[in-house]
Length: 164
Image (cartoon, rainbow, N blue to C red; front, side, top):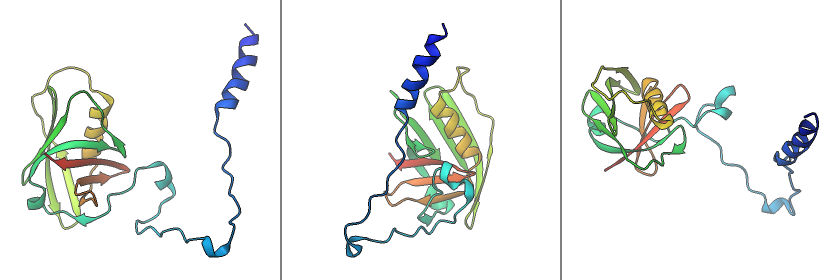
């Protein structure tokens, strides 16, 4: 049994990615400066999804039916769709028989959402459903993305919607 760790540790070490090497530029004229980010920097930003960038939304502009396309920077790839319906003051998300609902206000750039009880089935949540609920629970702003989607963000979480 003691031989197994001796085999596993070198295999695991071989699987780790190599340290990044910075190749020397061939010519200083070929170097281009890195684009500067307009998002505020924070020490924890490296491990969190980007905060929504783009045009701020108003409550009236949010009203509509949407497909939930991503959460925390990851695409949602389930065998069924997840939809979001937004009115002037409520956000409702449905994934099969699972439903979530939030009452919200959007004043200036500040979004405040609080979960509202809603009838839903009693099955366990998929990881994507749990992440969507967490992102909306902590959403503090809503912006139009460059891909014409709507991204809610706050506390390091994001959820991205596209019109249906």
